[in-house]
Length: 238
Length: 153
Image (tube, rainbow over all chains, first blue to last red; front, side):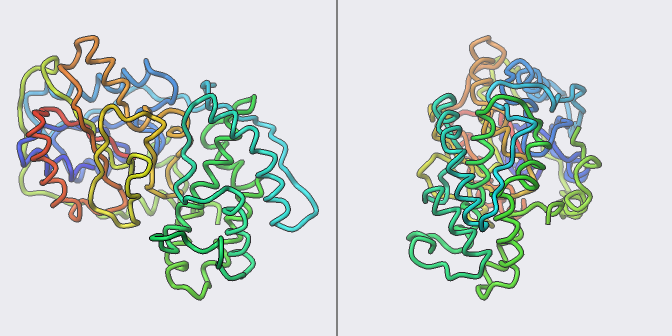
């Protein structure tokens, strides 16, 4: 990010930026930067809180009033990850959709059970992060189960036209996470970003399927699968 | 809450080990008061219009996002397990604060909001982005943008 600031400014375009990783900004020394104490992925702090976001914006845009640079200042208001935010609510005691069946059966049941909540969330918010892979959620589920069980990725499981197996992996994994977490967010209750992450990877069949696909994918015959598979599972859950 | 020392150890080590560019110069362009500036957003979240080309894993180019693009049509193809996406799923503005910029313009706190905004994909190195960034700067100047807000992910 700081590198972009340098290039733009060098071409005559004034810039200011939000910094999420202060040590990087200290090294790169962009013209103007506001370091914020928020989690990676939330540079404006709190979703659904316009006043909070405006306070961040006023601080970072206010750096244009600085007479000289580089300037790096700290934002002193932390985001409250535990605060209930409309549209970001999922239940703390969400009952895992467990069963005695195969991974495919349990993932299929989980997807079917969550579909009504996903649909409700989409209806309420009007937007979804799902859809990057260009295939249905049921096919995404079968894709990761097949990968986990060493089955050939052919037919509906093969990448669509113009898509590499690497892109199929990346986007299908994000689509599965988006489907499950957006469905959970539409349910009553609340959960922090960190708790949602732990819940997904430790309690859902979707997380279990991605973990199993990761384990199998590391030894897959296709080198592209081996190369890309690490991006679908956070290091701390492998 | 999520300062670098608070993220999981494995992730923390990977982030700390990322190589950062250094520069011999420190360009710093002045301009009019904020109330007269025209502001554009440049994100590195791998954002683009739904239907536009998704970013490849090492893409160093950018996508244009017209200011009138509906929030429902802004998607993210920067794929990484190391940052939260639930905030983006709940509220585009936590990543791409386009509505907040319009509110500041309406209140007269900034001059105006640019017609076009942009996104790179943060997995690429800054050096790889340099040619596209310098070319994009010419478009920003042509659009009379004199305030770019860079937003990481």
